[in-house]
Image (cartoon, rainbow, N blue to C red):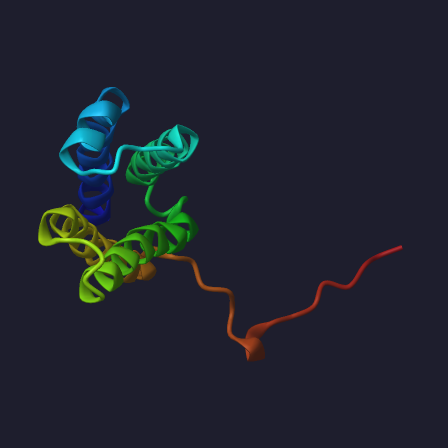
Length: 139
């Protein structure tokens, strides 16, 4: 359980540290990686959604067993984002500088998978089908 707590806590902290400054870097990013953003609503919406996920990671870190089902979309968030960027890189649509930060997401996605697997032993299992006794209503 401590493994999952640490993974999700540090993932959330890392994400906040990386994403929060981007609210103030739109112009610099547009200058350093042209063309400049011509749809700021997409830029800030992406940041908002990504930042919200960091808070979800912190929530999972607080009680990994209770929020274990949330680990599945967390894994998807990491691997879908990284997968899309890797695909763009392999198709020569972005350079290695753009790819590099998303490789951290591959690592974190892997750690999320390990966390999900490791917490399985703490999940209460329903009784085996042969042990199930239906509840009979009384009048």
